[in-house]
Each structure stands twice: as structure tokens, then as C-alpha cells.
Length: 480
Ligand code: HEM
Image (tube, rainbow, N blue to C red; front, top):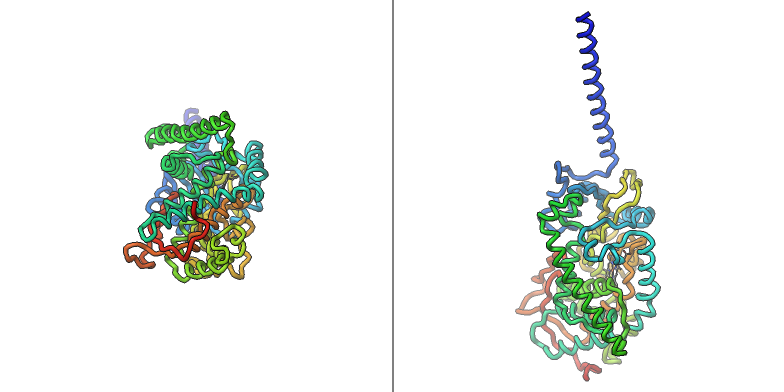
């Protein structure tokens, strides 16, 4: 009897043990098959996943290097967050257009939640009714072709002020990057608030910080569930200070605007939209800055662009926006600059609302999507000699940047494509045309064009372009 009981106990224990092992094996198998269904990616470490692989260089460069090894649809585990990285036009089309409704959500980014008073902006607002309404105001009211045209006199006046400043400092070194930032800042400030907000430097440093934090690459964003990490990384303190600064700037602008209204002085076009202010200045000045830098590095292109603008505008003696329609080569220079140096090398991150299949792989709901626009613009299947600055490539090409050609998406694509394209373009074209028309440029200190440093940084104010100028001919219409 005792022996029988012992035998039964052993049998039961073995059965229990076996069922636990089977259960574990089953679980591991399911995990394995889930992992198999995810896109391929580099090997992952426990706890940190692929975080260690993002150290050392600029994120868009590192991600391109990894995509070259693992493919244009790649999975990365960054701390707690599951990410896919898109690096080819074909996959970008699937994600941004074919499955556009699913991938139009933005991920939760701690910094943005704080700075935007709980996602009350457009760029990071959740995909839903509020976003639809504010975006509609932008596209149907604030940033229409007609409205943008109505700002022409502001643009003319501000750019002429810059030309006057450069003329007065002819021959001496100027920091063109700083001047061009001041210019687009001045235009957008007057357009958005009816006057020029004074503290340009404070504004600029706040925007820099916001852009860095908003990228979602901070350590606290990789472990969203850990409040301790947020405290330890100094993120909470940083955010508190940043929020106070940005709130003070916006409050200052609103107070000034109210005072003006009370005085019965409406100023010029007075608008309350803050995204226009942030999106409208640094992005455009960065492109002007890069275009001038690339032309300084490529004197052949500089000469060709300069000849064009001087031929077209010589009779008038100055550049106006009507003449800009005739500057075909300058358009190619701007396109080539946007291709090689998009303001957002990694588009603002997205997230999928529900599970879906991309290119045969399963993408679980709430996966973060990083679209590497910088890598896509260098895809050798679409671009010959992709690294070369060669504006002529657009001569017989229909490739446009408005979101229809996925190999060229400096403004993004799909439902969340940038709504500011019409506003941004004249802010890039007019300053460039005038800088080329009125001045001959050279690098300071006998520097050769091949010595120009085009190194980037993962932020605005990518670099500081120092140049000196000589007036070209007689500058009409710039006095008084
Ligand atoms: C050269 C200038 C500019 C560039 C390169 C640029 C680029 C971009 C990019 C890449 C996106 C993300 C698109 C996506 O997720 O697919 C974006 C979004 C956005 N941009 Fe621009 N932008 C520029 C100028 C502007 C201007 C001038 C404004 C406003 C006046 C503006 C307002 C916005 C807004 C509100 C969004 C968010 C759209 C949404 O989430 O629905 N941008 N921009």
C-alpha cells in the first residue's frame, strides 16, 4: 500500500514537472514565434535592448548604418519601447500612405506633454477630433496660398533690412547663420503676433531644448513607466525650467498683444497660433543656411545660381517674388538642399493605433515608428551619386517634396505631412535670391571651399556659417 502511494506521488510529481516544462516551452515557443514575426534587427541586450547601439554618432547616421545590415524595415528595442525603423521609399509608402490611418498617431513623449499644456499643439496632438480641428484651421485659414501671399510685404521689408545690414558691413566677417535665423524669426514673429518678439536668443535656446527633448530619444522616454529614472536623469527638473521659460515667452507675447488691442492698435496680421511660430522660423533658416553652405562648397553651383538671378532681375535692379517664379535653377538648389539636409532627418515619430502587417512582418499595436528621411533621400536605387550636391539631378525629374514621392520626404508624407510648405518656401527663396543677387561671397581667413566644415549636430543651429561679402553692382530700392 505504502509502495503504491509512493509510486502515485512520484507519478503525480513527474506529471506536474512535465506540464510546467511543457508550459514554459510553449510560452518560449510563442515568444519565439512572436519575435520571428517582428522585423529583423540587431541583437539585443537584456533590459536595454538596442540602446547601446545608438551611442557615438548622430541617430540618423547610426540608424542608416544598422539598416544597411538588417534591412529597410528593422526592429529596435530601445529600453521598454518597441520601435520599427523605416529606411526605404517602398516601406515608407506602406507605412505613411497605404496604412496611413493606422500610423497617424504620435507616441507619448514626456517633454511634449508638459510643454504643450497636455498636447494642445498640432504636431504632437493625438490623432483625433482635436487634431483634425486645429489642423483644419492651419490649412484652411492660416497657411493658405492667399494668406501666405498677403505676408509678402513683411518678407520684403525684413529681407531688405538684412541686405542693408550686410551692405553696411561689406568686406567684414559676418555670421550668416545667425543673421538668417534673425531674419526668419523676425518674419514669423511679425506674421504670427503682429510685432517682433524681443528675446530672440531666449526663444532660440528654448526651441533647441524642445526639439532635443521632443525627439523621444531621451533615456526617460525609453523607460516611460519609471518615474525614478525620470527623476535620476534630471528630466523632471529640466522640464520644469523649460516649461517656465516657454510659458513666460508665450505669456509675454499674449500680454503684449492684448495691450496693443486695448490701445486699438491691431498691428499687422495678428495670430495666436504658437506652432506657426516654432515651425515657421528655425526650419526655414536652417535650409537657407545649408543652401548657402553647399553653394560655398560648390563654387560652380554658386556661380550658376547667381548668374540666373542676376539675369532675371537685372532690369528691375532688385528681387521681388514675381521674379522668383523664373528662377528654375534656384528651385533645384533648394530641392537638393532639402534632400541632403532635411530639417527633420528622422521625421517626427509616429505610432500605430492597431496591429498590422508590413512587408510580411507583424507590427504590434503601439510600436513606435521612426522614418529615416535622411537615409531614404540617399537610397541608391533612386538617386545616382546620392551624397553629391548636384541640383541638376532635378532637371528631368518629377520628384517633388510635397509627400507624393516617397523617396523625397523632407516635409513628411500622408495625413501628418507638414502643413507649412507654402509658408516656408518664400521664406527660403526670397532671402537666398537676394543674397545671391546683391553680393559676391567668400569664406573668411583665406579658407578654401574644400575646407568648409559641413558637420551636423542633432539640433537646429547646425553650424555657424561665417562669410564676408562684397556688394555686387548698385543696390536699388534699399534706402530709407
Ligand atoms: C523648411 C521648412 C520645414 C520643414 C523641412 C518641415 C518639416 C516637417 C516635417 C518633416 C514634419 C513631420 C511630418 C510627418 O510626420 O510626416 C512637419 C510637421 C509639421 N510642420 Fe513643418 N516643416 C517646415 C516648416 C514649417 C512651417 C513654416 C510651419 C508652420 C508655419 C510648419 C508646421 C508644421 C506642423 C504644424 C506640423 C505637424 C503636422 C501634424 O502633425 O499634423 N512647418 N514639418
